[in-house]
Length: 175
Image (cartoon, rainbow, N blue to C red; front, side, top):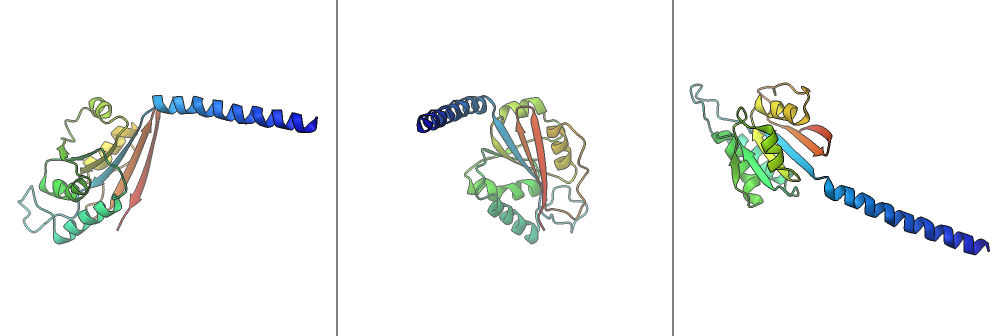
């Protein structure tokens, strides 16, 4: 008799677990998770102060390659960059390694609602600047948590995850 009760109880628990799992699976299908990786461009050439669109330095190109190796196993759906040499050059190794075109965006003219709809459920790399990258993060999370990046810091990585109403952010610093 005890064996039968244990058997029925075990069967009940197993069936209940599978039923719960199906419900959770259906919920997950309805909620699409978007993940945004945001970085500032790598080190730029500062030799000509009048040049508003400088290229990356050798160190900057090395950092761009390093970012590509960091992101090697991240399955990006899209790579966005502002329309400057330094940001496109930073994004290029990652985009090429994942066979993606770099999409240009204007950080001051982007319509966030449209961008979020377009990228819903995707994993996206966004390359910007010392002021635009943290500002974009703040807009994504709808809070003013991050200030401009110090001018000598090219190693911040912000990872914003949006799933339904939940918004989280992680800040990692890479030297």
